[in-house]
Amino acid sequence: MDIWERLYVEAEKKYRPEEISPFITAYHVVCALEAENGEIFTGFCIEGCSGVMNLCAERAAAVNMILNSGQTVIKRLIAFRDKAPSESDSSASGMPCGACREFFMQLSEQNENMEIMVDFASRKTVTLGELIPGWWGRERYEQQKTENEK
Image 1 (tube, rainbow, N blue to C red):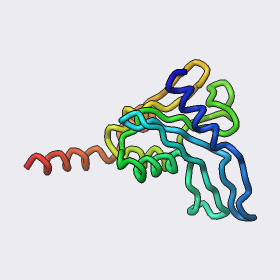
Image 2: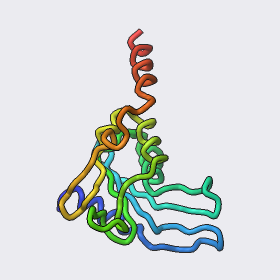
Image 3: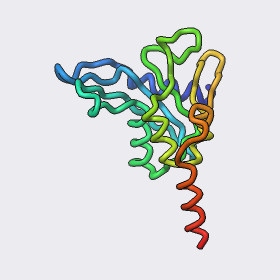
Image 4: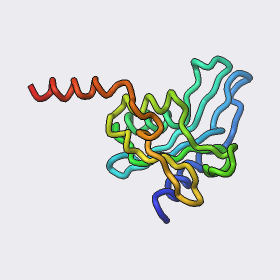
């Protein structure tokens, strides 16, 4: 079993769409990520009637990683609904939303190298850096490095 299948299996365990209340649904998008040290963390989405209360599966998995290990660097990520990501089926997209992409970049500049599953069958991936080229925050990371060298 390769790492992508392991990630898929772990995420799939969380998939069980549920109406938590008349206002909140959960578990209909799931995610598994591999942290820098190889540990796997999972998450599921929670959506309310008000968008500000939504939490994507990808960010939930990252928060689990931070809370349980203190890590901030992600090597690989897979997210999906009821089936694995597929380029030929737009209903099976596994792309993180803009807020998740931004969160990952702010979490660690090394996350620009994280692989995101695009097509599970062919194992096609894309890096976060490819999804957000010319990211606005690089200067802050450079400034931090300069300050740390002093």
